[in-house]
Length: 452
Image (cartoon, one colour):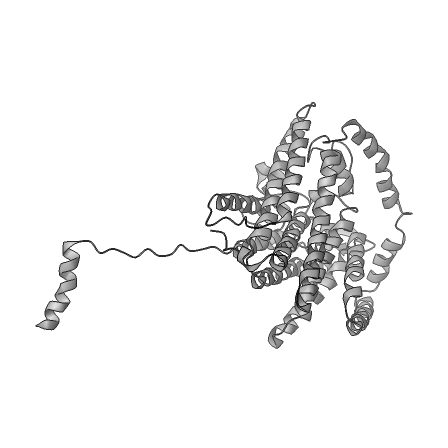
């Protein structure tokens, strides 16, 4: 009887008044998880496939990047969920660059524009919004060193995919990326592989071999860091395999920008390594060069020749010949330029130098914004290195500095903002530099929860 009445009590209670349900805590979305989805779209989906009406700004990676900015701004509206806590120089740098682009957009409206230039200027704003979203979410959203390490691993894993695709393209001559596009996307660019000196020049899932080579050079230091400091024996072989994949595909782009990027990585990293690491690196590098010379006769000689003739070959003289035209054009609109993304190669001329392109499109103010952006990444990584208390974190900071250094030199060899993969990667890396600086220099109570 007692048990029956006790069992009936809850039923009577529920009949008399509604049961009050406990509120479940809101699920929090980790920024690293969202950025990881962006990495999948960036590295796996071929960059030359876009949403037709949007052109260059319609690449899936650019659209996801814009959503990152929207998410960041909406989260900033709530005191509970806002990622904006403590100092973060990356925010100031991004605001400076955005204002420079907006000023150039307004300046463009003061001159006659063709329909193509108007569309390019509008879509350029979309691109900049996406770049800002990548950098801000990364710089402010990463809450711990563990999450930063997770993101580093996923960047390397993502870059390994276009490296693998590039190897397939190089050895077979088959453009396999035509089978990776989503239905409904439009191909922007050629699916035919480039050739140089009898070698196929693979682009992987990037839009051009130069872009692929510079991306791999920028990610290589991060891959080296993960392999050197891997503490799980079962994963060590996998991480060195990714290093070999990225480093091996890099010269297959047959690009001097890629080789110069590799040289920059060595210059930045080797002086900070212990002598035994440097010796081992030299031996491995020499052995790899010999193996590649045997397996792929002529490739090493071709890429070395590309570097040795810089300044005297037709390609170099053509680029230096752009200087006079650029100076004349910049002198007409020195402060804010003719408008971001409006210097169309089919209308004007090809400028294989992002610094010159920035001076043309966004003026001296925009050029200063670009230089400040790149130098900020370098300085934040170096300051994080000085503030770090352990060798592993110091090495990570130096590797991020090496990645930024690749961009500092590489942006002078091609118009990087015209290529989606390298631009997105560099804004992501600068965001990582800002996150590392914040985690190493600010007190623990300033660390914040993930974005909602």
